[in-house]
Image (cartoon, rainbow, N blue to C red; front, side, top):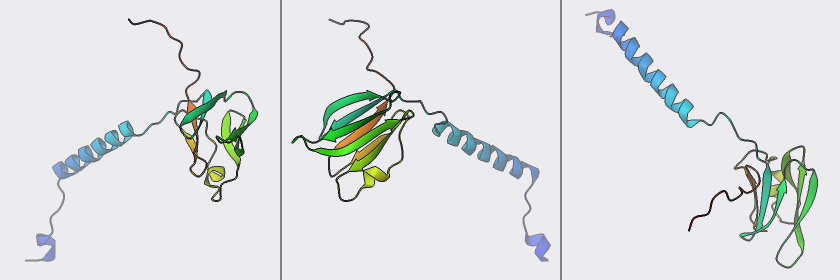
Length: 132
């Protein structure tokens, strides 16, 4: 028996099955991937779990973030619709090297100073109904 006889060749039906499987995998991948990010409107700053402020991304500003003792530990800069940690007194400086954030759900974290900066969709929603 020659080598050509022992090799199995893909038939037309095999290629159809492979194509359907690959198309199914591609569809599942596309459904899991967030293609459109929602632009945020507000940055919320928390220190040690307590919210200390909420600032609009549309207004350029520099915010000194203070710890419970009133000592400034971090500086957050909001410019051109994005927020970036520009200064910190922590030893590792990871928060300063994180990228700018501008989309809803993005965060900057400074673990040594227990600072969390989060982008939200905008202002807090107003109450539109009362439930008793």
